[in-house]
Amino acid sequence: MVVGKPFLTVEQIQKKNRELAARISADYRGKDLLAVGILKGAFIFFSDLVRLIQVPLTIDFLIASSYMKTETSGEIRLHYNIRENIADKDVLLVEDIVDTGITLNYLRERILNEEPRSLRICTFLDKKERREVDVPIDYVGFEIPNEFVVGYGLDYDNRFRNLPYISVFKKTA
Ligand code: IMP
Ligand code: MG
Image 1 (cartoon, helix red, strand yellow):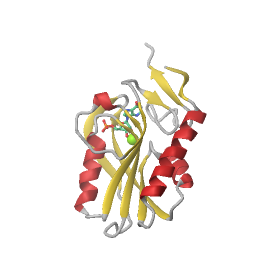
Image 2 (cartoon, rainbow, N blue to C red):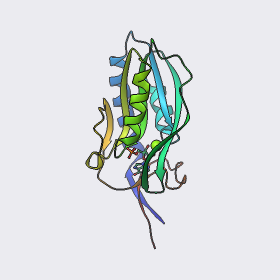
Image 3 (cartoon, protein in one colour):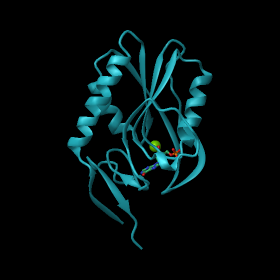
Image 4 (cartoon, rainbow, N blue to C red):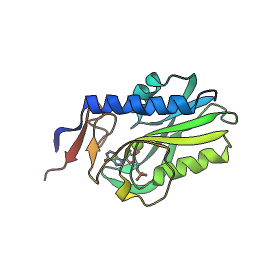
């Protein structure tokens, strides 16, 4: 297993987070923002992002899993759901990466069923060419090619999440 040089550096990540947070802060002025981090993958991006957002907010989390190693199982399991009442909230779902879109589509439908005041989606990375389900995304950090990446919260087999940058992961025989 090989983890290469940074594909996105700490500096690039920080700059992008400031841009995303500035847009989100402008869009949510006067609203009742509930930022929801999707665990585990989004935990680092989420904590960086919320600290840069300049409007009052509350936070909650979801724990969902769909991935088996580098192959998606296509089946989503929800291990922890939002505990906050979302009826009068402007919910912002925060994800690490959108690949096929199956996970986010499932979570989005579930949340919409509970009728929040509004729902938007923010993802740090978007592997657009892999999309199977069309899911609307409001804030995208970086569009990336079809490579398996790790670091900055993203894992291979629950490892490499603590790398401070994003790196392409290559599996060796
Ligand atoms: P989707 O349901 O196919 O969009 O898969 C989304 C989930 O797959 C993400 O939340 C990640 O946990 C995982 N995933 C997709 N691509 C990668 C990758 O390149 N590195 C690490 N995890 C990934
Ligand atoms: Mg994930």
